[in-house]
Length: 241
Image (cartoon, rainbow, N blue to C red):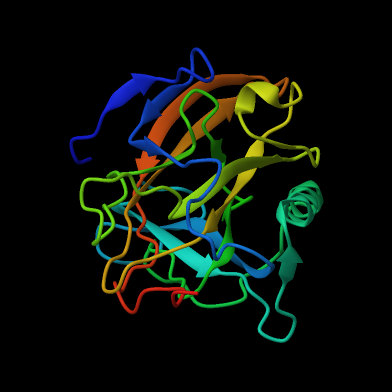
């Protein structure tokens, strides 16, 4: 991980923040109206030391590879109008357990978007992992760059409004607000702006967990993933109003 600040959140005592939190609002005036939802599933594939797939009876894998899969349905694109509709959509999808099966091929873990959207990130339900309840689940690695015509001024709202969607359908700002016993495999936030030829690097905080015979969590392994959004540093968006 690159050198980033580690702080205790002043908003929620006890929640550790590594990196730069996403703001709640944006200073860009063109974050209005209906927006598409782009849905990515994060998953893991393992390979044996000699490159073969690991047998089901479980001899030790040689490599663990993280991947992203775009789960958008090209025949039925999803658009939502505003924050409340996005919360309803994400909460219902989380309660249903997500979209079964893969709708596209495996790609590197970078999340490729080229327009303003709501970005919905899901963790593979076939893997024993979830978003962290001890760390803020998503931050940017670096603060947002200053505006070209105001190099000394603050820049706010390239990405906004991080939310957690839990298995019982609730959507909350912080994990402390979730109902006991619910797990979080979904988060989402708004992608508002990108400068030309500049992507943005993120930290995603997840945890692998083991449970006992009664279903109670007894071992947790915190892990940090670091996708870019988007990964190609292409044309910025949106066009100025």
